[in-house]
Image (cartoon, rainbow, N blue to C red; front, side):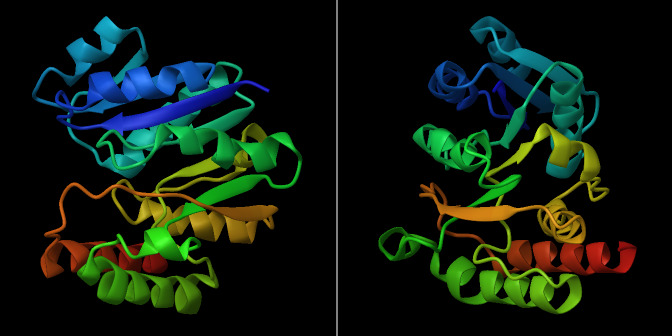
Length: 222
């Protein structure tokens, strides 16, 4: 099965070379979506030999993932993995994320920061104890989604599932919208434990509540 990986990138020239070198050997095709960067993200991507797609303006992570996913579907992907460019996800978890689909045990797989008690303690306090519980409550009450990680950006889906999942939220609310679409389509779902390395522990309340605001927007849209 051909595994494609989509990575949205906005001004990631400091990280993109390392991320490409870590991920590219593990997948059949690596797609970087430069989401309106003003730095040399695109130049470094081309230099490292990954597929480059570009947005002229910054449209948001959800929009970049949609662009990359459409490319994958049009170019023979069997499994599509969504990954981040900031170095927080571990490339060695890609196989873990894709395995349940390869083994016909799931159609969509979400990585969860909270299934492994040892590593969940590394999640920043505000995110773990305030933002995530609120986001989880919104998902459960308004979307009927009850997964352990309410804002998981590390996921994999079969090509069949990807064709039927249509998210419209361009920014961070796309995470909950994708979960809602998965629930609505009755896909076979599995969560697997992942580790996230946080480089910035100082996420503000305003940043967290911006995510919550976008979740309510997604609720109204759906």
